[in-house]
Length: 352
Image (cartoon, rainbow, N blue to C red; front, side):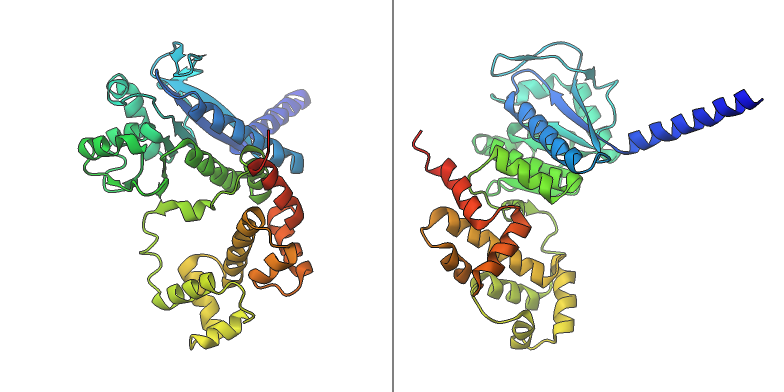
């Protein structure tokens, strides 16, 4: 009886451990089909793995990635680069992913879409069950074909904009945006935009440090923050506060102002308490964080594109003391202003 009791306890422990491991896993699916761009699959995988590695160095209990390459059937897939990829599974046996990446096609997507009936059904099914879908370039057409994007915003490769409008008139196409976000769908118009979405996802899964390190390692050039590039469905509806919109515009155009947020609130005829509450309600972040981020993003541009000294950059974004500016910059980017300037200029102005 004692041995049986020990075995039962061990079984319970093992089951609990397996459950914890499963709960601590992020499932990734990468769709494969002929004539796809290999980089629109390899880049997300390499970036996600890099984010996982950074996170695990900091915390051994960080979520692990479980990655599957999924296709209509188990057979080698021919890519534009003439590299053949072998799927891990077909759509009928694939795991339910947390994130599914739909790669771009080099040529007109219509013929490929016509050969993916099971893939289209699977995409619609996993989305209805809670998966997040990320489409790159003409890969967005597969999402549109399922009806998932009907009455929602999307973007795609510029060359296929007019065809997309004709094929999917119910989709609210936003060709002026490189990224669109709607519920659990992301669309990228280019490979660079796809990389920015991946950084955004790494931030969601692994936090700011992992996202920043991946962004630095994969793209040293100056890039706009994800939030400034994407069209977010419903963003306007969630921010009807005209006074806070006026304050935001003032903050954006007066970065070097010596006024405190309390003084700015008074300038707009509102108490600090009411201002703090309304700003957070309208934007989702507190006013101090918002203003600091604006200052640091402008400082990044000045460090990369101007010959201003670090003291002068600090003054341009409202810091009288360089030490205060340097401390905040390092806190937000894990780099000093001097190190950041050296890093981006090595990339931008290399003579090699």
